[in-house]
Image (cartoon, rainbow, N blue to C red; front, side, top):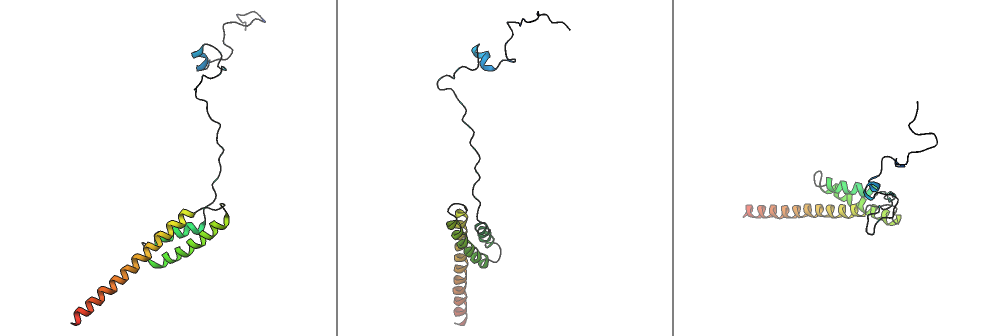
Length: 138
């Protein structure tokens, strides 16, 4: 196979890199020029840092506090309060190595609201029953 150029001679009108980058086409020159003032320069990638694990007791307490609204209202709420207190101690002792403080707070709030709701329901129910008994005997 033969070439159109003589040996040792390179064509002068061929770009050194092919295809040309959009910067070279736009500026008509070398792409390695310094960027203009205010031009976007991409930031260095941020390394991935794993978050600390969540306390298992905090997760179980949160689930039980929600379950206490649907099934057997008071018992899971009391168990959730005990587990939430245990998780709070675990999180405090870990000095940041374990997270879940938000779950602990949420499970305590949900459990206490549930217990308060059922206590009020029982007190009001007992009062209404007492009124019916008194009104029926009169």
